[in-house]
Structures are given as C-alpha cells and as structure tokens.
Image (cartoon, rainbow, N blue to C red; front, side):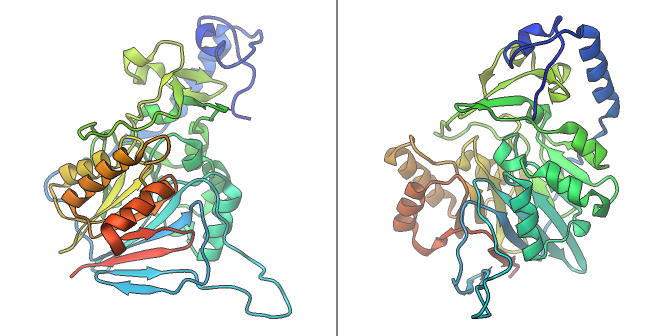
Length: 385
C-alpha cells in the first residue's frame, strides 16, 4: 500500500485528492516531513564538463522488458555483438527449472570497460521485484558489482521492482552507492487513467545506504557514463502525457514542495510534463554515443539530441530503450520520427518496452537491419574501433 490515512490541517487540499482523511492533526504531518527531510542523504552530482569520458566497450543487458524470445541465435554485426539467451529444456524427462520472465516495464544493466577499469550501472528496475530478481539471478547480474544506479523517471513500471530488490540485496551493495534521479519531481505522487500509479519510496533509498544524486544537469555516472540532464522540447515531438502528478507528502511518499517549482505547487493534480526524465549514455571510442533512452516521455528525438548536446558528440552509434511512439500517435508522427532518425543517422535502433509495434514495423521497413527488437536477456555489446 503506497498511501494510507493521513492528518487533516493545512495539507487537506492536497490530501483530500488522495482519499478519505482521518484525525491526527497537522503536527503529525509536519513532524513526518521534518523527519524525512532530516533523513534524506542527497549529494550534488558531478557535472559533465570538458571532455566527455570514452570507453573501449559497453555491454547493455536487458534485464526486464515486455517480451522473452528463445532459440534465436547470437549475431555479430559491424561494431555490434548480440548475445541472446539460447536456452530451453536440456533434459527430455524434465521441464526447465528456471525461466526468464517478461512484464510491462524496463530494467537494464550496463557493463563498461576502459583499459583495466570496469564499471557496472543498473538503469531502472522494471515493474515487479519478483521478475527483476528472478531475471537477474538467471542472467548472473551481480548487485555487489554495481558502481551506480540510475532511475530514468518516476513511473511505476521503471521503479516498481526497486524496493523488493533493495530488500533482497542492500547488504551486498557498496556503501553509499550513488543513486541518480533527474530531480525532486521523480518522487511526486502520480495517477494514470486507471487510478493511483504510485510514488518512489525515498525512505527505502536512504535505508539501503544509497546516496541520492540529483542530476537535473548532465552528470557523470561511475566515471564512464553520463546522464543527459533535463531534456528540452526542441523537435516536432509532442509526447503523450499518460499521468498526472501532485506536489506534497502523504504518509511518507511524495515530493517536497520547497524543492518544486512554485507553479506546480497547487495542491491539485497537474499534467505530468516529465521535466525530471533523464537518459544515460556512453561514448564508445571511435564509434559514437550509445544512448539508453529508457522511456522517452520527453520525445525520443529530443532525448537523443540532448545526449548529443550534453556530450558535444554528433555521431550516434545506437539508441536503446523505449521510444514511446505508441497509439494514439499516428503514422504521420511515426514517419516524422523516422525522418528525424535518418538525419541523426544512428548505426542501430534497438527498440524496447514502450516503443510500439507500429513504429517498429514502419522503421524496419524504412531503415532495414539497423532496427533491432529488444528482448529479456539480450546483451548488446559495442566495442571501439
């Protein structure tokens, strides 16, 4: 349960939108907020400045995604190796004892190399901890190796597995492990057309001894990667706004009003503009950018161009993640997106999660083999020249 009963008082305009209230007084809520504020461990992220870091190789493993594909062979393409889970029943007298699971959501593990250095970054956590921890165990993803974690935005299908993951593995994580978000907006309570859509558990992050890193500007991640910072609305794109958000704290969940823009601090639900959304990128030496878009609520073209702007690099090697080009966006919108990708000219488009089959079909027809479908367990390895 994300929200329970709350106190009445000055906060009533906020709380009344979330459900029935009970007695308890404004003092209880104020004390709770003060305790949360005192307990939050936040550090400024190291901003990306000067020369963008380069890596010799980066491997992106899809841990949680919508689909599982088996019995598809590995591939080697120019500058890309695709390692797929080629598995199945190896005993004719018994069923497989473990299986990768698919669900609506996204989680990725990025492993990068520069000389003798290795860095491991977890990006998003999928929808449920059961699927996340199951898939991580099968794929051999080791939380003890993580050098940082990044949450792209405050949607449940990207953070839903986080608390269960932390409960299971926090003892193995490195102390004060950096946890990057794009801003306070990440923590706001959200609704979708089906009702409440949850809120990120700040206390779970603090209790797991993580260091919360606010990265509203482009920031370094584990010395090898960088986040985009805020993604500007610079292209034709007008992405869907599937959720609304409200500023305030309810039963320990939500975003601090003092850390939010005044125009959002209305006590009412407002259209979610995803101003906090970030993407994570790597620069592969001699090859270009690998951009992990996650969900592209700010527009996939806007996201890629922001990574280019932040890094000062025009060459894009690959775009991986959700592109959010879905119904009711029509074919004209899809074709404009494809035309923009022609102009950017990435070597590979690897579509996942919320991309939409219609986009995949039309992009594949227009751009051919550079368009690749993601699946749970697939590992995409990009190496320098």
